[in-house]
Length: 80
Image (tube, rainbow, N blue to C red; front, top):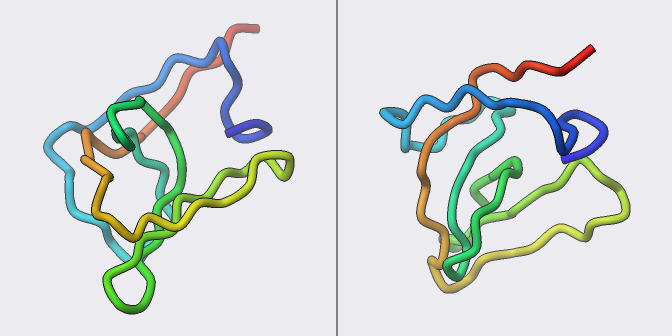
């Protein structure tokens, strides 16, 4: 999720929030049993876009309902 989030950042995750909203939010989830942190955006026909802020990482479209939401990132801390 660079440049928004960096490898050493500490994330605060709201595990009670597991429903996608319309806002621009960052989520922690599993995708085919791999932990991920990305933006999620619902699309037509029940599809889900997995979006990265890093332009070098391609976006993914989940058509098989393979995403399991774990929570929403509500804050992060970065070392100085």
